[in-house]
Length: 113
Length: 115
Image (tube, rainbow over all chains, first blue to last red; front, side, top):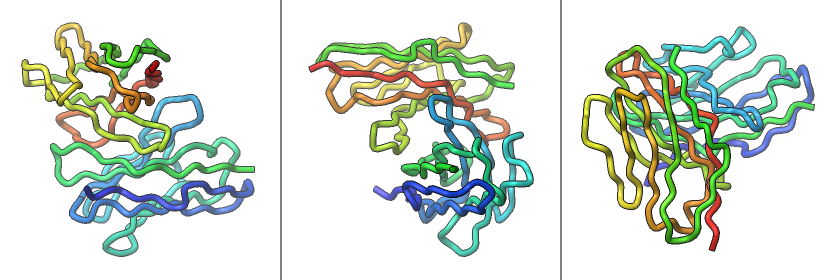
């Protein structure tokens, strides 16, 4: 069964550095998402992306964050100047069409030092 | 804003027994979808079951079934004949039928299966 894949599985970065988290959604999916889960807390929505543009974003998704679909397969989340509170598990998800469920990747654990 | 509440941070069940995980939600919308996702130690969130709000019949997927009480805004997950592989964190999630985008997740219930 096709899966959403995320790399790396664990990223350790110095505070203030830029980090890019990568996702390869399922190939025929059209909607893409990023979520984060701070340790011990609930999964929180960050952003959704459709037709090469952001369709919805949460309050968490401020100017520090950006997303991009640089080619036909990758979907990236960039955090420009990381802060300690950005440490979390980041999940990518995709879905085929409007009424279909989202499929999640394994997540990338981001640790900011 | 929609909220999803899971009041049981941890649950345990004996192997082969039945367990019910609770979820309540708050919304003013009439068209929405509810989901249960499983997050095993391998970390990937796996869809377990989904329910459309307009359907009165409770969704069933093999050993997993839901008790959807729309008026009470309750969406519990029943796992029958529990197996060791069912041990995981379970998240209840809500998605609007109108905007169709973001999920609202509960805080999760950690399920332990005792052999």
